[in-house]
Image 1 (cartoon, rainbow, N blue to C red):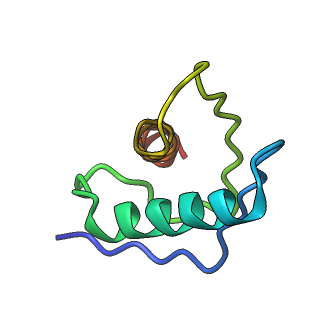
Image 2 (cartoon, one colour; image 1 turned 180 degrees about the vertical axis):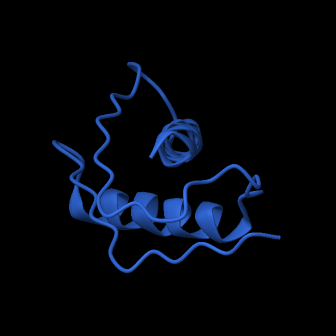
Length: 78
């Protein structure tokens, strides 16, 4: 299984209150910990920037999944 190391993860949560943003960041971190990593990930990505907009009424779980999906897609391209 490939290994991935993330030294810093920054989440800008827009209008989300601080407590909800913290929960979202924790969910994303936990999701990354358990994400299945494919063997086709790039060897090194210095910086990955994403912009993910939640659909109106989207749950925190749904937003977490969107972020994880986009992050893994971007890592495969790096």
